[in-house]
Length: 62
Image (cartoon, rainbow, N blue to C red; front, side, top):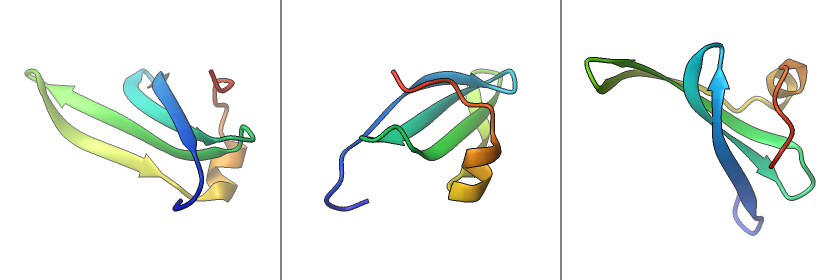
């Protein structure tokens, strides 16, 4: 991602807290979803494959 600007915001991903980042043109770049237990993050799921991101029902960039 060097040389480009990205923006992201908190989102709910399949009922889990997460973060989605988009490029300046609104294309999704990455998605992180967190699983938490007892106040600690126990798992992080990352999706960075553009083809998979394109198939997901993601909120619009903010």
